[in-house]
Length: 163
Image (cartoon, rainbow, N blue to C red; front, side):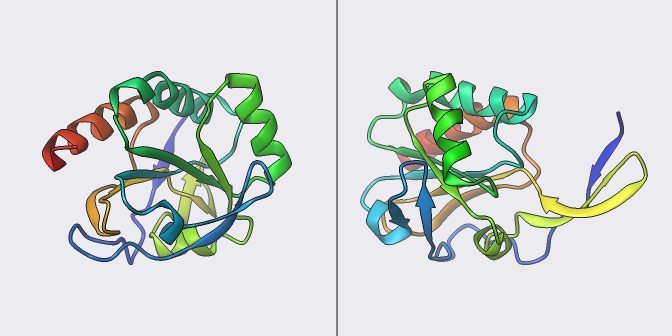
């Protein structure tokens, strides 16, 4: 399989304010960035629940939850809340999954852009992660992150924050 992600424009830089959002989670509740402030947040964007790479990424993050103190893990995908609920339940994720069907939040974070797979070019989620500090500032950006690197980058980023 050959896959190429073309880096998106507008990726928030460390030190910048994290773009605000208001999205529906897997329980149907509205979640805003403002409601999550006060502790570090790993906001990660993944293409589709229940697919191999996204399941690996989410389960690896689930497995480090006990090592991240008060930090929060928040996943974002274009999937409907009902599918996110099934994903959470099936794999016992236990963290917030947000539905971004119109990909407005993904665009604001530079996680939506051109992808190329088997010669076909299309727009979609570019797997990315952002560590946001308790004040709502981008502490670290991880564009085009691999599923297996996400927990490692989270733990390293939290260590740098002293969290």
